[in-house]
Length: 333
Ligand SMILES: Cc1cc2nc3c(=O)[nH]c(=O)nc-3n(C[C@H](O)[C@H](O)[C@H](O)COP(=O)(O)O)c2cc1C
Image 1 (tube, helix red, strand yellow):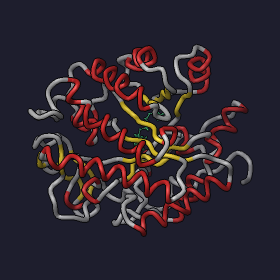
Image 2: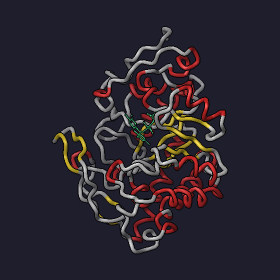
Image 3: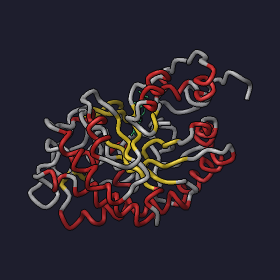
């Protein structure tokens, strides 16, 4: 099950019992990857998204991992630092968002207090501050394991902080973290290494990328070479998996050749194409996102070739059970 932000946490980034019910109902996915979760208050930028940096947040996540484990499932926490994709009305600290460079991302986001607002102008991280940001990911990894997660996923896709380092449009640094491909991938490689060290096991840490995705004002005219260089740089770390969201530019095929480890591919899959992909050996596992929203028993439905319910998009990010925990299963639970 793909990571999907559902915005049901409270304003302090604490998930509710509904979230345990939601993930528990999807425990037969094989592996659930949670919604993006902030490693620090600085990494939080959206309304009602969760964190994993204080005790209230960690305790609340324990109920989620317990619900999934009670039904025999596995669950990784996706660690998401938003970087410059943030608005002050959604944040718990007054500090400006941090990013590789002080370049505001075009676009707007929802705030509960002020409706749609432009992304805030970020401040560029000083070189000397970068180790502390990486240390936040390491601490978040330890916190996730303490909360009972089976592992964590570094969110380096979709235009958030790691992706902001990878892409030249958002990274105009002149230090060792900007410029050449080797420099632009450095933050992601160092962060993944720190997370693996914190976990004490490479098998507990995966990473997601989305080469070619322009979401959140990512500007990268030539993303494939950097993603191949990244895959080659992380291979010796032996992460649990490389998770690629396909975007139509064929990066996943090139990454299959460049990366000998476990490859997860997602993005618009249905049953037939997923089976063909696995049979052809172009991925080790296929990731489903949107179909899980309205089909808690997606696995059963695919097994039976039963019809899939359509998700109500208007309830993707709204608070409460509607469009979250109220989708029925085929068989009474
Ligand atoms: C409501 C929603 C929220 C999402 N939130 C996240 C997220 O927090 N982290 C992430 O990596 N991807 C996120 N995605 C992207 C999905 O993980 C997945 O890559 C994408 O939906 C494509 O797969 P699909 O076609 O099977 O839905 C989200 C997608 C949806 C529909």
